[in-house]
Length: 298
Image (tube, rainbow, N blue to C red):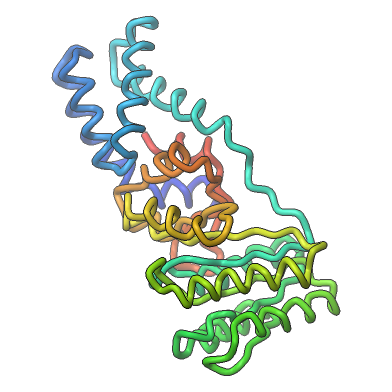
């Protein structure tokens, strides 16, 4: 399946929800104040966010008057243009090598699965990859990551459950240097900002990487579950207090009608979406493309 079809399938629920509601709204007739109020509510319902939805609709209102928009196709075309202009200011998420990519996030968002898929992604583009089982807190976490390592034929560095996570990362860095590894993927324990000890552990991991591997290109990616909607924004805010977030991996996009949260993330945090989950398979993780996203949204 091609990337365009994968993204289209992943956004199917969001697109159907938006299209159905917009079609019903446009069938009422004129683009009047009631239309714009209802359109704002529709965008909010897809988790684009209140302020962002209002800004988009205000821009549409001005363009509709200027360009004399009259039908649904014109409205959709203008909405796409507005969103693409919003995203145009974002730098694309590009990775330089050697790279250390630390995966962070709360419990249950799919961090370990994401790392397994990322290892396959990088191996598909001919990069040498090593996994680091830095989640020593959750029972059987390293075993789960080991299964992904076997599945993707990737090296893995791990210690016993309960070990110092920073020590595992230290060993991973030593291995990466010795073997000239292109990508070191570091798993971490799922944590909430209220778990002070785990957040401090995250800062310690960050310090170890900075000290022991200064020549590497550093990336902290937060994994967010698209089905949580606006709560994803709270998670970004909480983690950003402890480590610098460089990009986002959005999982379970195919399981929600609220994929508009991507727009809210860009508007509020100006963080690039690095990868999106577009299915359950090992190859169902794709680099994110904003133009493709917008084209498949309406």
